Image (cartoon, rainbow, N blue to C red; front, side, top):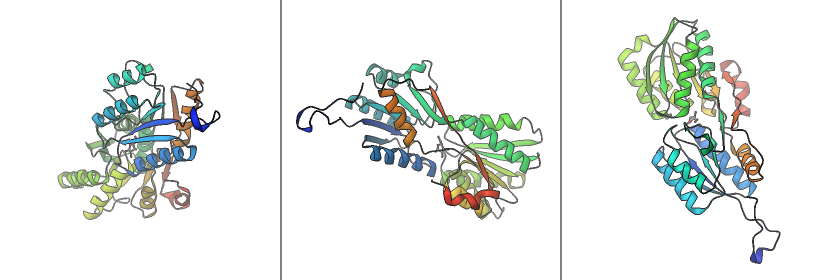
Length: 305
Ligand code: AHR
């Protein structure tokens, strides 16, 4: 529905503030914090009443938040889903209440696609492929890679693994020798990398991390083990946050694939279109690019997150 003129003292021309509920995954990474800042900041700029709920990495909290948004009668629900599956019941409730659901940054698996209006996100499979191709060349198309996966069951963990493995099929002399989840966090990235080093330190030529935070944790573990990250052990990751550029300038991270978290402007433009009855695409892809040490120092100053 179009914004209504509010009754009473505000006068006939005053418009009701748009109310949007946003269920965010949590604050596990610098990327996530940048996304939250963009969505909150843009709401403020546009005079939108944003109800923000941090799920602390738990789907159950997201389901509770969505139910509360429905009960409050928000105009739109924005969901950054922690995992891909298990959304049908609550999204059916949102649909019954006639509230559009906009997915940001991560997709979901549902049998009925009408349960959400649109998805705005990067192509995670392509990010994995870009990381693999870049790394394979840098490794001279041979060697052993250890993989730090993102949150189990999340779209970026599933798709970044898939894209990476798919691209590696072209390089039969590269093997993924270890692969484990470190939940997209720096502390767990360090912890899992320490375990990898402990069990097989002479067999690691490269690290592929599904996000920068885990790579930065792994770099710390490699440094502490005297293993020379960025040189003796190559490190590639995804997100392109400021910390990754700093690590590239310091020669410790070799490359990062961008994943744009600055969702605010496109998100509210999309909500405005939906409310105006315009048709929006089911999927809008954020375009990403790879950065490596050759341009890091030039680019770092212009990074927004
Ligand atoms: O869904 C995007 C991913 O989630 C980012 O790559 C990661 O940093 C985050 O936590």
